[in-house]
Image 1: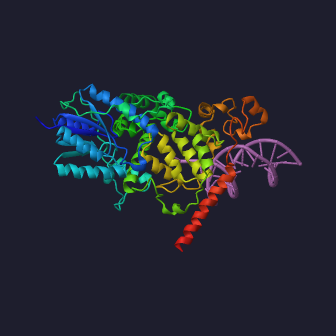
Image 2: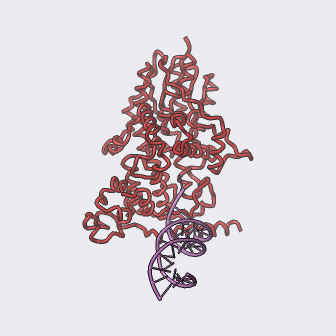
Image 3: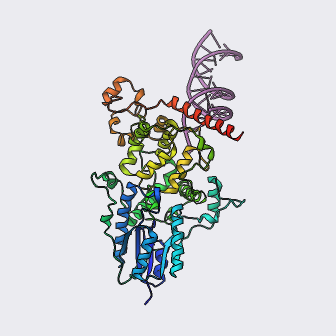
Length: 480
DNA sequence: TGAAATGTTGGGGCG
DNA sequence: ACGCCCCAACATTTC
């Protein structure tokens, strides 16, 4: 009888359109399904607590999907290279199948494992599944990797379209004696004492089946209005598929093909956002230090401030700017934040508070259920003005104006900043400007029930522009 | 995938 | 009737 094949699940926690699983099943070998909780290899970029919460439920869902097909998901913890040695010894596996990851640490780790498998004479098969277009195939005319989104996306659209997603295998052939598995609960991925995940349980249904239902609902009811609705933070204009995509409960091909009419205005606009996801991964592959160093090296001289109190106020949603505070509390409660709220709150940290973007990047990393190294680092750099195709530094959001434009009735603020819920829409984005009687009637006491703004917008804006100028003159001096 | 400052235009009130 | 002023609305430039 054929020696078993290991299917190594990573961020591809699904059975439909999973090339590694499908190829392993077709090989005819009995299957060992493996997930490794490897806390060591990622170093500082190991998943945060919110991502761990998601991971727990996603693994439970995958385990169930596999069990329905007669395969046990084996859970192991430890350095992946070491776990592999053990599992291969225990199972006598002759082949390993997995789908590629693009994080620098994962590429290094996988290269080591490949070398080890070669030495041991074990076959291995790597597949491309988590992106629509393989980064290596997308080059500028000069043969460089793209640094500007629009030409990048044009090149994507000119490339052969992504394959149709493959069906989930109906049945699987399991290895007769699956290796021992850890108990998922013993990994303690869920928070205890205190259990802060109540908001997340309310906000999400985790796993492949739920993800597929969400996608179908979005494609049927919302994508047509995506372009006009996506910016409104209090409405259901966006897909909220990001964590499902990050953990691979859906493939980007599933999404691409579910948007039934990409030629519609909404479909185009939505697929373009998938394009940004591609672009971010493309950047991370081309620039392995993207999470830690500004792509535009001039920004290494940017005069950021150390201000723990301000950073804390930002993290806790107590800046005195209702939109920023709603955004930060949405993040804390649900593990997710609306795209526009991400731009506004990130811009506020960097430009109003003059705090290094890497501190915000770290906070998002720890608190987002969709925390993704490529997206998170590329987008923080984009907001900071030091990234690829970045927003110009002087594009400084006015949080009150952004609120008035994109949360006109204040629904978003009311949901996450309940102490302001009684304020009229006219003042909800700028309570400091409300007459005393209005505040009293709404039960708001500035400085008591809700903070005064920690910085004045106009002053902070001037300060940020001056800081940018000082960086530019430093750079000019340095190069002279 | 901004906002503020500054410039331009055109309609209506009015002497 | 005409030109002047005001200012809203829109456009352009600047940060």
